[in-house]
Image (cartoon, rainbow, N blue to C red; front, side, top):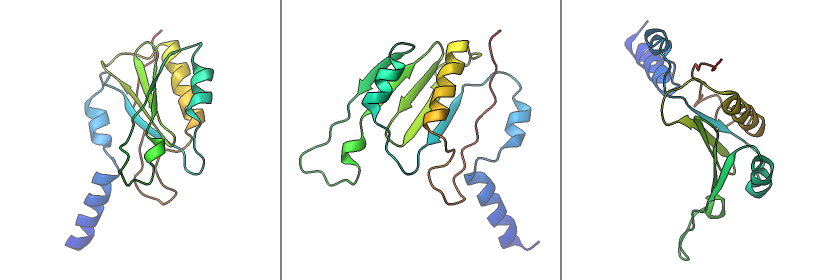
Length: 143
C-alpha cells in the first residue's frame, strides 16, 4: 500500500470511532455515552414529555435565543432531560444523548429508557450519507 492510502484509512478509522482495541483493553464497566438521531421528522418534545413523565424524571430545558440572532434551527434548541436510575437522556428535536455520570450496570429502568430512546431516535449517525457512525458502547445489566 502506498502512504496516502494508509493515511486515508487511519483518518477514516479515527473519525468513525473504530476503536476495538479500546474495548478489548477495558473489560470493566465504563461510563456509558451514546448519541442517536432522527433524520427527516422533528420530535415533538411536549408529546414525548407527557409519555415519559409517569415512568421517569422529566424536565424541560429551554434554550432561548436572542432577538437579533441569525440561526437556522433557532426554535429547535429546547431539550428534555430524562433521568432514570443511572442513565440520563438529553432529547432534542433531532438528537438524543444517552450518558451516565458514574459507570454502573444498567437497571431495568435504565434499560427501559434506553429502549424508548432507541425507538424515538432510530438512527446511529446524523446523516443518511455513509460517514460519522456512532457505535453503541458495551454495557452491563444489573441482576
